[in-house]
Image 1: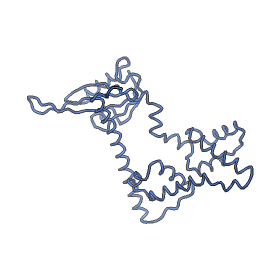
Image 2: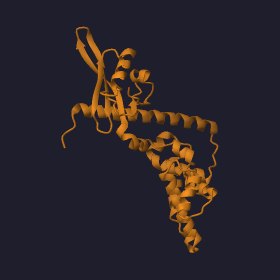
Image 3: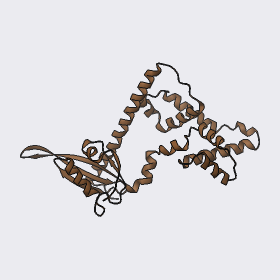
Image 4: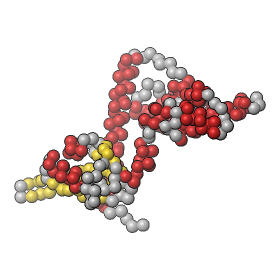
Amino acid sequence: MGSVPPLLSFLLMIAAGWVHRHQLIVIEFLQAENRLLKDRLRGRRIRFTDAERALLARKAKAVGRKALLEFDTIVSPDTLLRWHRRLVAQKWNFADRRGVGRPAIMRYISELIVRMAQDNPTWGYTRIQGALANLSHKVGRGTIANVLKRNGIEPAPERSRRTPWSTFLKAHWEVLAATDFLTVEVWTAKGLVTHYLLFVISLADRVVNIAGITTRPDESWMLQIGRNVTDAQSGALHAKRYLIIDRDTNTRSNFGGWFMTVEPR
């Protein structure tokens, strides 16, 4: 396998830097929000239900202890992870096996419910109930709701609205592109002049297109670049559906956000 060209390596580093900056902004917001909430509580303890503990434990395990320390969480990271260990221990609690028949069947059905909910974020209680009926298991909607609560899994509307970023990327990888500016300082007769280079990178195949170079990335220049990259025949965003945009004002002021849907002309 040949080495990666220096320019491409540099561009990939910039793309990775954008993701890191966005994550830092999210973390700063959560830290500020948690500090305000702690100030309102003034040392008062919050009593969580078993379902709420299970939900927080599942989320905390995915985040990790190091990141939890940065968030300044209401519940200490050690407590959250202890709740998760208890949640895992419950899975391997075979005390109900001392009975025969129904306990083992209910455990199997509960595992099916959890698996169906996790694998199908848009499935509600009725849809899961129907899928279980197809497997000859008659289970009430209330039972399904209780099983999901005990395992810290949100109802379908919440699950479907909170699609993980990694899941979204995997589903749309072929139609994703990203854009950003590079700046190069050039000495001229008038002194040091900043040149702005706008590039577009296709995430699936890592093909980089130079959209334009200018010393003044004003609105008219950006509008023309927008027309060029969205051209249905030869534009850099041909066959792309989503574009990731940096938080830089040069791009956001004209493209309108950090993430947008592409509509080729």
